[in-house]
Image (cartoon, rainbow, N blue to C red; front, side, top):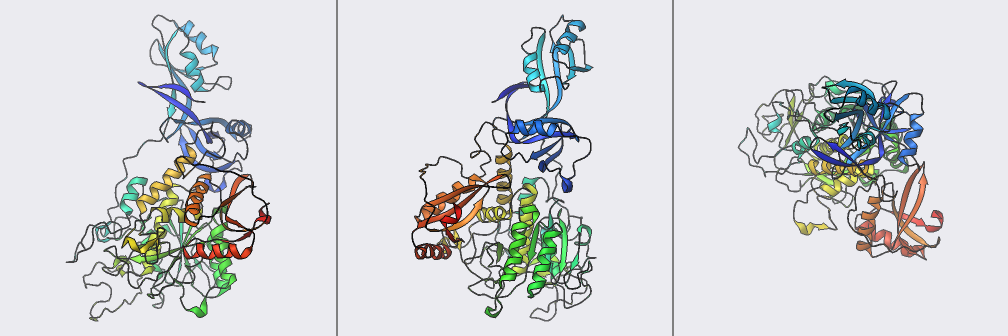
Length: 625
């Protein structure tokens, strides 16, 4: 039910958030040690309250807030509201401004305050006072409405707080930023006579402006590779928990000319905005260097488990193999799956692999893992980089060399690459851009670029699962190249398109606001719809628990169910079966396509889906009963 309140010269129509509340506690709520009744923090200080999302299970928000108010460490709890047509959370501070009618005296005014157990805070003049609610008062929004019905009161307005737009964000001023065409492509190389295609970039500067910051320090990007120069000016300031897979120490190998690859890869993702050199896609993120790429199954398990156990949100891997003799075994597949599904406290680590530089029609076997974001390369002219491997598992592509290389950090012990002339080691045109940098490219640089975009997505909405991050990347990518190369939105060369950081951040913010801004009067199945807006026709009938289908996933968001059901039904002309269940207090929707009497028919559908780039697995419907 909406409540109307005065706000200056306007009137706001407010509804409660169905999962956010404001709490004042006896001690600061730290993100890494959230109480068990809190899912996540939203805003640390809004109207004097810490705005958090509650784990309310099947309870309504009123019941859960009353329960939380009874905890010893909670001093005050308040509902959070949204104004009609807005996604900004509103918190009443607990104070009310009251303008009494001319001619009222203090005795009459005190009677009014006493009637609602209000505490006088301040008198601006003889008739304008500020009062605060007490534990015996109604909530401040109701108090303000009640006061306006009293003849002694001219008007009453509750004091509220909302997040404001911050105009302090300015682009980094690092001296090589204008050279980084992959972040913002102006159509030319700033210090070379070389034309590029304007706007053939990842839209990173636009994403920073939309987000109001260049990522978040709460997001940690792990880069698994070899050769991290931990003293490099564009790596050294945001390092957390470095690790050497081989000796299991915190000391990655330094000064070995055989190992240099990790330094440029990491810089593309996280080089800080420190006023010099280059800038990474998410320069505010933390950087976890993990030294030690390996084909060994036990080492693979160790590296991914280390990242997941030590707080990595994103794991970037610019390595792998396309040699058919060295495909992944089940141990390695499971190691990657465990991190992708169970990391980040169950939301899953976002794992990315480069598809490889072999000019093959299939991708790096690690990148083909269904839980991985497989990244290919496009050029500064929005063309396919001819070296970049192709395949149905390709998720997105990202700007890299093929026309003009990108600029990245270089390890101090890097002996450089000799170009065809043999004269210049570090820069394609021989122009010196500093001893700390070099030209770089391949899918090796495309992968950490997308990892940085993933970090921006999580800065916008940290509650997203790894699968949702992958989904957002693919949904928001820009279609480049010939439209005829795309089938059902996917290209073997470009994946779902060239990554667009700005659109991805916008979608992450929209999903966050769609969940947090839901009306508390809505039913459980309609609140928090992050996608699937509009009208849907439903035809619901009981499904017998026998036969076979192809399960495509399990979703916590009903909006995703709507979108997937509509798309899959249209694409494959098969019935969609939804199993609704509970998992740790949350509703989970398992989606199965098809209901066949014989497993062979389901297997045929599975192969058809696989050819279209849709991953699934055979499911006996009896197992879902």
